[in-house]
Length: 320
Image (cartoon, rainbow, N blue to C red; front, top):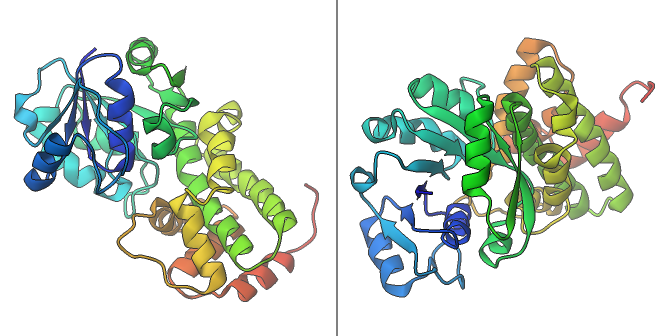
């Protein structure tokens, strides 16, 4: 196995640490100063404090040095994925590229695998998604993820290559379902955080998660996803995690909205951009996505939480 993780944020660093237990792994960062710092301290204190690097992990700033057979894990924010692919196209073209980001690109309405395919048609794209926090992975705590690839043979190879002592991968060919599960659950997590931040109670959060899951299925199935994918790790599993934990940046943004507190704008929150993209996409598809619409209202500051609650509770009564 030969792997490079492109992106030295918390999640990319955690994946590199876990994968280094199986062989040599490279972690790419664009900032040379950060690269030198990580190689000197054998940690990424800027993004994942307290997680020591294994001996087999090397930090680099030049992708031109990696072997032609290298598999690349793309651990960059969703809204930066296309620019990253374009910037490093000559090196990345023709390779196996595994997206490790979750979201829908604004403007195009595409998920990560679709963005890879559109930007670098010669690449072999896949997606890694599911319930996973960087700190847990870096600490060696166990979790299970979904590896989605339309080519079943490549998917099986990647499943074997990327499974580690603490990461158990399940494979699927349902890329659309995996993309949308990982993207849409972030939007629902913002809504759930707002509910808890405003003191509306655990029962309200459970109801919101359930109806949010119905929205996730509504869009995903309309776009050709399989229902069982949404019921799996990259859908329901990730939804349960991000809607209930303070470690989720999307949930924490929601908490700040509910508490009417300022949120650190330097923190990437994928669900905020995804909510805007999904609202645009749902309108074109004529899909009813009331919770997503409320989160979009929070993000663009056109809707308050009391207004959103009144709006949702006043919807017509219907069968479940």
